[in-house]
Length: 274
Length: 256
Image (cartoon, rainbow over all chains, first blue to last red; front, side, top):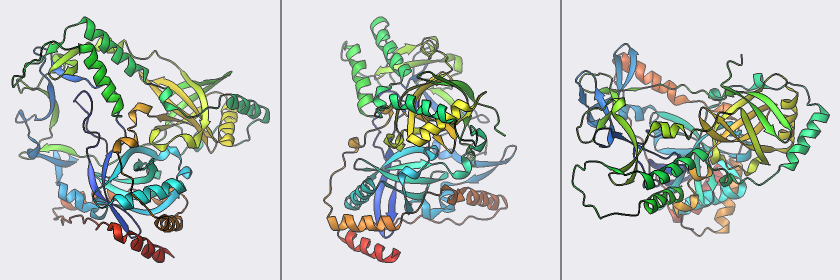
């Protein structure tokens, strides 16, 4: 369910862009929902430019035989069965593989969220209610919040089928994709010994841990590299000239702007939208 | 066989300095497709194309810019970015311990297993302490030129290092601006009863990727020249708000 590498820069206006819509159901209750992002990788995104004229570059699909760019409507999906031999699979055929799961997230059972080994968690998304589903959505979110439960479902998205856990975050429903058990390596071989820990060692360790107990406050830890990139950009704004891409359509300039303020604004916006 | 370790380091906190080897915990293999040109089934390549020339641009003519305003960039030299890479380190530095259930699952990004390097005594004691106290060590470590935030945990006598997302990478649920809808105590009560009835133990071994097998069979059938029937996915009819209580009661009857 990973999105394509992003080439665009700056704040992401598509945070609430729906990547899927369908129904989430449990027993006889069905709720129309959309799937949106819950995380936004924090990397500062740069734009690739053409060295000679600073024109932005775009990722395009290129046919090495015809030596031409290929528009999206001429691109097909192929499964390789031999050297340069492919079986073509259309979107409709793909969706026909497991049609019952491609528009419905059917919760088959509920579990206690705290029973789940965190090794299974992969990628979170938010579910948002669509028209008419707001009340049932709120009811499901509230009940699983109060009871500490999560719903388990199978869900087909794009080319893959996911096992997902649906839990509550505040007033929202969060869908977290999970790894399949068969994809998780057994850990037995890494066990530090079947034997009991040495009582003295264990006592000492517990004492050290107790002294360092705190609340979980992840906001204390910032990505230092990202901060340094922002610092670097701030320095460069003051010391070096900006380059300008030759505009395909001429854009009027509004005279000199406060570039440092603009940078701060962009960074602030990036933070807020996360 | 444990296989080769991905990385080696030391768990550090208080006076502890525990050598460990890091191993990948999850491996996924899925059917891969390639993108082809419809006309001749030639496999396509992704290229960077200049917006102005409309021509592919070789790597040596590509530079990195940060777009400050539309069409205006600060050019960044790759050497400048390299300069910002974190210093190499072998430390998994534990800053504090927290109750494990305080970490929201949305933070978990990727898990690794830690194998004791040289002596197992300290690992056994640490994993015993973490398990008994049900706590996680919040730590940072640098690997492959990136600094990670992590939660050091233990399960079944094995230490794990879970990479966590940074806090500002998680979009707050408040930004969804969900409206509050009034729900009656009765609706809440019945829904809770229903969900309790539908609750079982978490048994991940019950679930496997059935889709992959079916997809493989679709591909095989197509390879033999069979036609694939197109089945349109049906959308389930949403429960109407004024029929919600009725649906809950009927559900409860069904599971009883």
